[in-house]
Image 1 (spheres, one colour):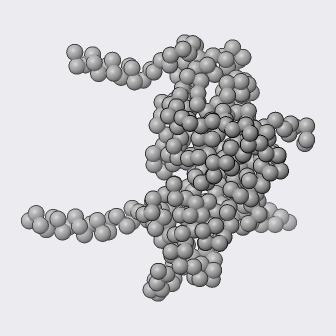
Image 2 (image 1 turned 30 degrees about the vertical axis):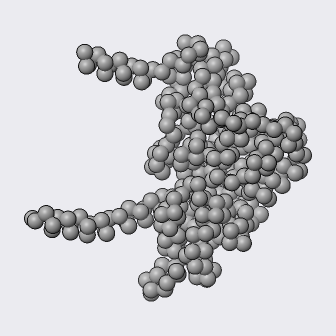
Length: 125
Length: 245
């Protein structure tokens, strides 16, 4: 094969592999960090819920999650609940995750609530 | 010659002999603790490594613990983290309810954390020696620079609880008395006796410094509030919870 073809092949492969790997990373991050409050399946039913006076958001609640934009969710994760006029019980994760990881996490959260809408082509911005 | 150098390097790497510690304590650490605890650092650097951790890291034990507490605990170990060191192994979706029971609305703990802690129990002399050896593990010295407890920033238990619960939301994961608070963090009603004030200040300021992938977020605690929270934790640890219950 010509070198240029190999280069193209690698480029094409990266388009397929990189997002998949990052999506997996976001899934693992959700499982490790968010699960303690938002629950194993993101239903806002984590193990710490009995200790909290504010119920964590149910990420599978389609009706509510549809009303939030991606940038709002990004802001809530990065700067905490207070940054979007929600509870302080949602901490700021800016020191734990990079911006890229948070963007991926927003994508993961969208798969919990709004998969049908994504397939339909809704743009959450 | 090369082979000899390599061997020497391996020996030096595998058996770090902390200065000052008695031989016996170091031996106990190497032979009986090292299979579960990380004595050399660094902390887990990826999520997958984090999931493999069996026991708390001890490579900065000398920065972290108070010696008296260590000696006491090693002779009578009890669980400090209600959900275990690695909560990914101990949390499960609520099981289907038995007849006549209501469906639980949140995830539950299961497995070994529901039973008393399985941990080595040491004899008094061994505990003293091991504590000495642990106090020599000071990998985190650099993070303690400039950390000083300000005794003038005292708070009452009520004010402290407001900070701990309402202002910074720590109560969601940490318990401030037995069975009151979240499960996934270590209990804090013993923190004042267990941990050095400098370590608490430093850890709350930036947990990531000590444990790169830990699930405790950086709460961006204001310096004045940080002093108040640590003073509150010390005050809290003087309460006698057994008597109250």
